[in-house]
Length: 369
Image (cartoon, rainbow, N blue to C red; front, side, top):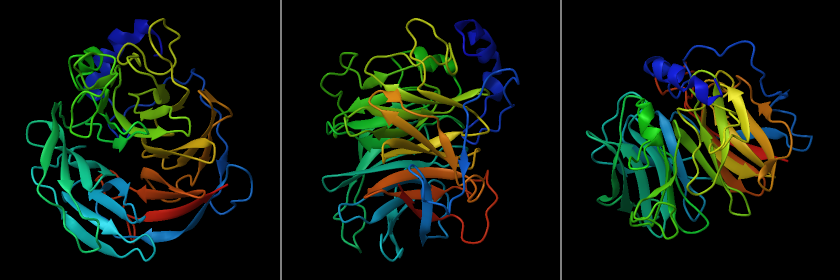
């Protein structure tokens, strides 16, 4: 289903497309798959390995977005409870920072991505009529509370599925957002729509200087459902994207480029469409958050219940992806670089699609190297 000729078939399948949990049908058995080397979590001895160093905190409800404060503490969004919780990065102690008004949880929507900048907490959420980004003043003290929100950007299409939701500030100081096409595949190719896009804007929500479409916050298009954004040390933007029933993707993002959906899913080799740097079966990944650390992109898998390492060098993949923590902690939602070869990783068993166990959901401390 990687060729343009399959577009009509993809359109017919859109009504039963897999959501962020990847519950769609499996892909045709004749297509090649990325080779995988699954590594046990406790080894941590070979280059590119990962070790679970401990659990920072547990008993989180539907955690989604995670953002680090300047002092290293974490803010965690609860998709379904509409709340933001501060987690002490040393002790794991949880303190309620506030509830975000206007959030309307349902399906894959709710309180999603978080970002922190210059005394503001930015939140991407699903409201009654749209997805939107707001920002709230926050002093950053241990007992501080979120202030009243102001709208940064509204009008992002919402649906029961494919709401995107990841936001992050790039090295250029601009705010980026990954959106979904809410299951309406045509929105991804419509550059007038905010659905199925990666958006780039000023911290106030205006089109960023140098955007490819004048007067627009649209940065790239042809996306199905983007939930992972990360930059490498040279400022290149990488994004993880949910496939429908065949291929999930890791893409290197360039301004104004078309990433194919719904004309293509996975590698298509079609002029005018950008092929992914890596791709996976949907039951091996269903990727949400990503982070860059130790020469690689680290990608959390929901349905795949594993953490992927994709080594990259410059604009290319420099080795085969490897899978870690396979089915050890259940669904994995967000991975965040913590510096010095460390990562934070959140589980996602309480999102209505998992099987919660004692202590779910958790934030894990990881060491890579």
